[in-house]
Image (cartoon, rainbow, N blue to C red):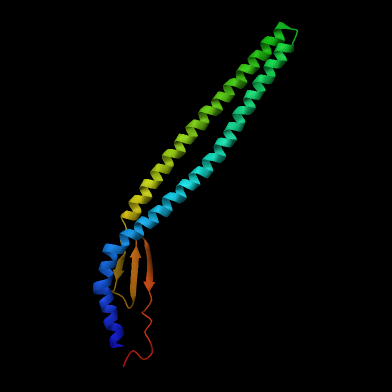
Length: 160
């Protein structure tokens, strides 16, 4: 087991600090790329679905306004024309409200996405793997995640 212990000590003293200094930043960049891409995709999917729904509601309100106008224009009574014009005006206000809500929602979600991206970036960049050799086995901790490192697989005849 002397070779195994020597290899482990070499890894802890030489390879681990080298890994943390030179390889870990590349791993962080990779993780950040995945997180940002996933967040953007999720944001795009959500916004497309929401905007489609809100746009459909606005278009439906516009259609109701047009229908009320047509009914009013076809009416023989001045009273009915005024009533339908008022109904059309209300539907146009509803359509405009849907458009404003859609834009507000889009901006809120864009702000939320940007905030989450910034917070996740800070969390990833602020985390560095720490090696704990104080217990019976090795453990690595990255942020709040901690895991045991298995022993190196040594060939059966390595003692010779």
